[in-house]
Length: 177
Ligand code: ADP
Ligand code: MN
Image (cartoon, rainbow, N blue to C red):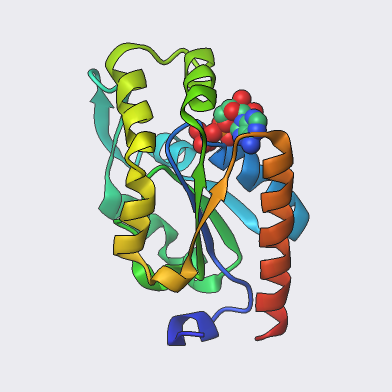
């Protein structure tokens, strides 16, 4: 474990991936199984107004990354967090013990995003983001490769398996403290 990791008794996990790959659903199930704290960055940004206004074109809040990092510093140091966000390059590297990148087949992701009301450029951009594995690249550029894991998230069975695998990893991390 790194020096930062040695300071916490429970690990911090980042669940990332293109919108629609199942970050929030997976994180909630994982929080239930592990009793770690689920932090949905999108909700946090909205609730605590950690943004610089609304982006009309992309139809989302313009996240203020510095405010988000300041807001989370203490509880990340404490450990035991599951952070859920479709980006990963602005968090301090020392925060995370595991970075999970969820991946979904195009046709499946397309249907999920349409269901969510995405259309036009927003839909296209997200499908492209998944095709080019942008989040996996971003994760590998931002964290040590050995802590980055890609997981398939096409079906409910995939999700259940992912939750089981990560829960086992949490248990072994905690007992190795
Ligand atoms: P994200 O937080 O990454 O945007 P969500 O967790 O909100 O994604 O999931 C988007 C939609 O897809 C939800 O309706 C959810 O129930 C569904 N979903 C997510 N992951 C899976 C999966 N592995 N199998 C089937 N449906 C899934
Ligand atoms: Mn989400």
